[in-house]
Amino acid sequence: MDFLRPASWEEALAAKAEHPAAVPIAGGTDVMVEINFDHRRPEYLMDLNRIRDLEEWEVGADSVRLGASVPYSRIMEHLRAELPGLALAAHTVASPQIRNRGGVGGNLGTASPAGDAHPALLAAGAEVEAESVRGSRRIPIDAFYTGVKRNALAPDELIRAVHIRKADGPQQFSKVGTRNAMVIAVCAFGLALHPETRTVRTGIGSAAPTPVRARAAEEFLDAALEEGGFWDSGKVITPSLAKRFADLCAAACNPIDDVRGTAGYRRHAVGVMARRTLTWTWESYRGARRTTEGAA
Amino acid sequence: MRIDFTVNGRRQEADDVWEGESLLYVLRERLGLPGSKNACEQGECGSCTVRLDGVPVCACLVAAGQVQGRDVVTVEGLADFARQRSRGTGARGTSLDEAQEWQAHGSDSRTGEGGGLSPVQQAFIDAGAVQCGFCTPGLLVAADEMLERNPDPDDADIREALSGNLCRCTGYEKIMDAVRLAAARRSEGV
Image 1 (cartoon, each protein chain N blue to C red):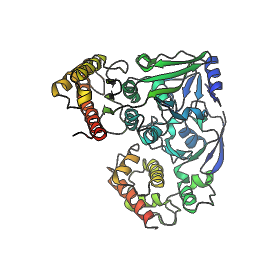
Image 2: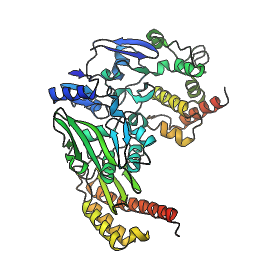
Image 3: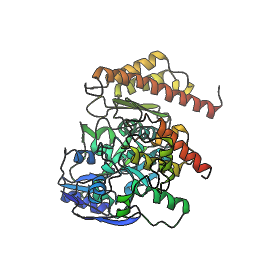
């Protein structure tokens, strides 16, 4: 094994072009476990810790450009207002020690269906900034996950940053596990209200081969909220509407039975989380409307 | 490969390090510092918690090559680190020999008096927070860092800060007591 230590992003791209099999390592959450347990012996290990740019973020007008290695603990601390769903998801990642090193770039690189960031990214709307010596491109988050632990990166590409849409409404994240800390999600659910476009977006984790959106559920809810004038009136979402949304979210799952839970349990739990996160975010939206518009 | 880095305030180098090796392995097997414990090797248990450039991390998840030129504090250097922090200056660091010979008991093995303990270590002894002791080094490093950031933690803060450290003996109550004790003593200037 060779240890590559690029001092700059350009050096990292050149090294990845020369050694496409090189495994990038930043927080080590996934890579070091595989090496410690002898599940993986990469020919080249490429340390990204020396590239400090990867730990920086910029808040733009419409989106946040989040460096691939910004630790989860920083996201929780500094980006709660702009990226509330991701900040909530970040808080459920493993433990403080892990959150101090791990970042979204690693979650995306591993592309495990259980990665905690994915439902939040799907719900908020995001693009992955991938780069190689051939150039840079933005991969829509919906097109990024291609299979179990597979993503759309080319062998010579590295993840530089993620561009995540700033919240224009309430967002929520929910995760099922046996305890609060150190849990790989049995299943997880992210939901974002987008009042500016009058749309709702979702993200489901650990309940399909890849992280997925519940598109049919989103389309149903978008239409129902529009037809019912909910965005303008801010009235309470009816139980039947919430139930239909939850059922459609559960139907978007394609889970398996494994040691963490059965497929049936996962489908059920995703439905419950969908209903709850919809209620939480909608109540928050109604509350914000009351505050800003002074109506009762 | 060779790794040069700072451990407990002193420059150290480790030779013949395998490229896939963890910081934990370097500390324990190459530098002879077994205070950081090796249990799960997957970041689950927190027994190997050390400070890397001041930040608590699992040493088992840091590749050795990633610590080149960086600063590591282990439980062996915690007492000196705490002294340095309270005095502001005058850190002398902890040499490998000192660290390897370091013992918690000093002149009195039951109370820890005279052993040069950090306040959080003393609090763990006084509160009876140590049973088998395997999780203790990681808990000490994590608890010490939390008290540095948050001198007046409530129980939720303590639970959150220690949520990445597993103990299979105590049920955590005495550990909570120890951290509360360390915080109380600090606020009273003891």
